[in-house]
Image (cartoon, rainbow, N blue to C red):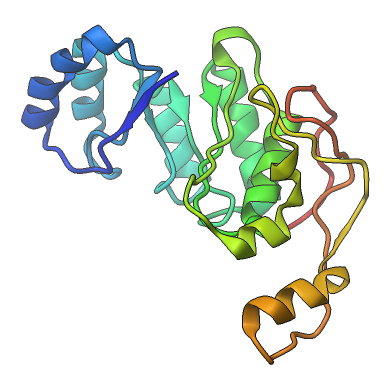
Amino acid sequence: KLMVDANQAWSLDEALAFAPRLQPYRLAWLEEPLRADSATPDWHVLAQASTTPLAGGENLIGEPAFASAIDAGALAVVQPDVAKWGGISGCRRVIERITRAGRCYCPHYLGAGVGLTASAHLLAAYPGAGERRGLLEIDGNRNPLRTLLAPMLATLRDGGIELGRAHRAVLGTRRDGFAALAGSREPEPADVALGQHHGGVENELPPLEVDP
């Protein structure tokens, strides 16, 4: 599947002019073609004119903003970011609304391993099905700290990863890796709870019962 991210770069007129040019590519979605705070009618106009499904949500803040965007119906793919707003608990409530509305949930996250792992667990708990099956966004750039904190990425096979069965990820067990990245400075060990239910992203799991 191919997706395009406009990163809020276009006005409505620009988006309407560009959208038809994407039709031959049969993209999975067009992400943030308009500013996140654009008027709801503008999103509706573009959604009706575009054969490519629209995606967005990474820059929405608060449950009311998500409720308004989901209920408006212009977004086929909704992308809350666990690190930008809400954490696991807040995003769970938004995801449940996305599911009830018949939309596709795809977590947005771009950065290091802790947030990516939390996003992966949320997606494992709410994977969707069929055309609404969600995908985990992973930055393709080299990132040694992410590799250290998200070892599950090494299990990537056939488009899926295995999250494992351990109940906690203990960062203190990776002190040698941190020390190597930081040079002579050795960080203090720390524990981060990532969730009670772990498993492959491709398998449906019970909802997480963990606060951020």
